[in-house]
Image (cartoon, rainbow, N blue to C red; front, side):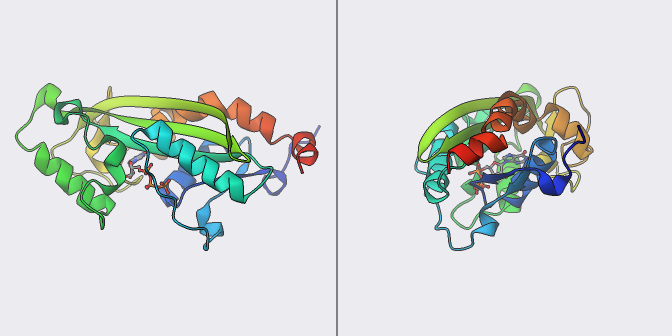
Length: 214
Ligand code: ITT
């Protein structure tokens, strides 16, 4: 049977406004579906991430969008960088680490400043991604993935997004900001979580199943 062209692939909506995440999901899920994010729904209100954990916030985001887009599976990603020597910070607060007006750049600067006097094992960190699929307000699946590494002393590389230019994955001498995207997609927290959840996404996006639920 001929394989489906990209335009024929089913669409998966992702409850994110983070273009870096969307780009990565579209690459990680390219054999399964096309992805769309909240930039396609400009009037959809801001989702308040009031959870205390990544998993709780991923559930909040997936459920909120799934109530607005009925009968479709919705994916959400809540992720963050955890530095054990900083008591787990920035963790669930990674996006707004440097305050309400935070940018990726201001967050990296704050983290580098907090770690200035620390070396060796005290710079150990991991990224974690929690992914949730929800439909009509109910959670159908929840998984997570992690990648360990260390925080560098200075920024290097302009690939990726967020904290990538200061995170060196274990076993590599370059940051995610310097490594090719294909390398990040083999080992990242998000790639590991996607590997666990993509069979569920394929099943939920089967045309026969989507038809039944509309
Ligand atoms: P949405 O809630 O709209 O998805 P967000 O950026 O607010 O977007 P999160 O609340 O999940 O997303 O915050 C994730 C934070 O962790 C944010 O600061 C990211 O830059 C950072 N982060 C997550 N995954 C990352 C990755 O693969 N590389 C670099 N930084 C990452």
